[in-house]
Structures are given as structure tokens and as C-alpha cells.
Length: 257
Ligand code: NAP
Image (cartoon, rainbow, N blue to C red; front, side, top):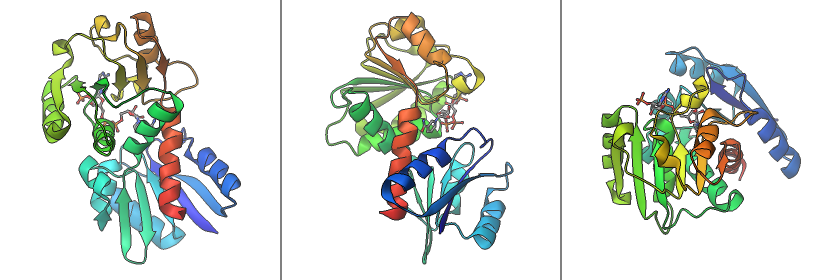
């Protein structure tokens, strides 16, 4: 029986165990998948103990450990190196390989499930943390890119630095107050604001006419971002549960083929 884990803090809310149990039923794979709460600042020690005592075949890594996970890997896939963050650990004879499946999960959910097109779209990404970086790394893999990508963040300098790293995509960075007018085809909330029950403090006019407002956060009820976007004129809004399922599918494939 192969053992898999999701590591985070907090981690009790994670739906990954349910998702991977469903994949296991669908494919006939024999596995267990459990949550593990790691202490902040102790990722490397706690991972070493997990490896020694519980012999994982693979792990998912969530907030706030994705950068620590990248540092703990002996090798990174190209997309994980580009994202600078790891959400999937693959344990092999040669050591630990880190992958980042968030960007591919986002692309798959937006295009296949939500029926929106990223190719040629005007895209606004709110936030400049690990998730925003993962999305941009996923967009680099698309055969045809977006027409325009704006990265806006509460701390403008972080958005500018992130956009500069992805200048090949034509990304531009700014603060919330400097946001250009829409309409955007797709607006993504990649900030952590929904975790605190708030929408990011962007001018309401930004949402007017948006084809899809997509919150990476997911919850039982529409998030504050989804509500704000719909109130201010976005045509559709959804949360990030579909992305979670799609990034999990990519992890499952990396582990089990
Ligand atoms: P992170 O690296 O900690 O980055 C946090 C970002 O949020 C920064 O840009 C930060 O801005 C911004 N922020 C925090 N609080 C804010 C507020 N109240 N108003 C406006 N901006 C705020 O976090 P992350 O890993 O990128 O995760 C971001 C979100 O994506 C989380 O909600 C996470 O759950 C979600 N996520 C979902 C999936 C999925 O599969 N659905 C996958 C990955 C992540 P400053 O730079 O100004 O501090």
C-alpha cells in the first residue's frame, strides 16, 4: 500500500484526501492519503522525520510551505523551477523531485470546465505571491498566450518584480490603485484576501464587463471576491475548487502514471 500525504499549516480544511481517495477508486490504485500538520519554520526537519518513519511515495504541499518544499528537493521539474515553489513531492530512488501542478490545474479548470479561453484573453491577476507565480509558470506552457497580462498587488513592488520575471509573456505589474481600466476577460484573485473573508481592495470599476472572475480560494459559500466581482459587473464568478481537483489530477499522474 503506497502512502501519500498533504502537508500544510493549517491543513485540517484540505479536501485533497477526498479528491485522491476518489481518484484511487476510479483507477483501482491502492493507496492511503493523510493530512500532516507541520510546525512553521520546521519544514525540513519534519519532512525528514516523515520520510524516515512513514515512507511516503508522494506528498502535496500547501500554504505556507511551498517555498520550503522547493528548497528541500534534490531536483525540480522545469515548471517548479520557474514557479520557485513546489506543491508536489515525488520520492524516488534518486531522492526527492519537486513539481508544481498549480498552473496546469488552473489552465485545465479555466479552459475545460469553465469554458473560458486564455489564448488571446485580457487577463488580470490580483496578487504576487506563490500562487500568482505558479499561474504564470502554467501560462508559459500554453501554445498561444494571453493578449495582455496585468499583475496587480497590494504591495506594488512585488507585482512589478513578478511581472519582470515573466516579461516573456508580456506581463505588466502595478499596485491596486494604478490598475488600468477593463474590461478584462478573466480576473483571478490570487491574493490570500479570501482567507480573511475580504475582497482585495481594488477599484470596483475593474470588474465591469469581466467575462469570468476566478477566486483561487474555495469555500462552501461564494467568497467575498466572487460577491464583489458580481456586484460590480462581472458576468460569471467561480471559486478554486475545480483548480484544486485539476492540480490534484496532475499530482496523481506524477506519482502513479
Ligand atoms: P502567498 O504566497 O502568501 O501570497 C499572498 C498574496 O496575497 C500576496 O500577494 C499578498 O500581498 C496578498 N494578500 C494577502 N492578504 C491580502 C489582503 N487582505 N488584501 C489584498 N492582498 C492580500 O499565498 P499564495 O500561496 O500565493 O496563496 C494565495 C491564495 O491562493 C490562497 O487563498 C490559497 O488558498 C489560494 N490557492 C489555491 C489553490 C487551488 O488549488 N485552488 C492553489 C494555490 C493557492 P502582499 O504582497 O501585499 O502581502
